[in-house]
Image (cartoon, rainbow, N blue to C red; front, side):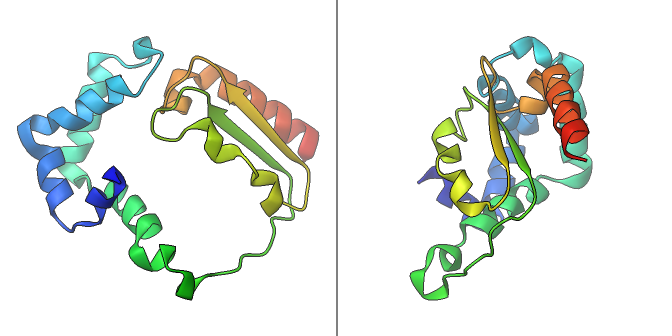
Length: 145
């Protein structure tokens, strides 16, 4: 239920920006498996961005997807099945988005579907396994287009 914290307007921004974004900086390192993927300069680049643009953009993603209206049965929305090939890339060791979230994805797709789990990789898939992600995406696109 921690995700409900993000639904409170203004409070998450205040807390996450306190102490020079200490919680966010710590979160990056705690949620990565391949810790060498982030240098101190990388972390400071994130801090610089948060200072200039704020953290609401990232938080608003959760607000949009976790609103109580979204979870209400009375506002259920039926989405059409995806009709184009889908290649889902997922980090096996993501502490926020467990690989169990990929289960039954095929039910929403009426086209070729493939799941590729990247082992020994945390929440920051693109940063932790950039070479592998790029390689398998290029292979998928070469075979699909």
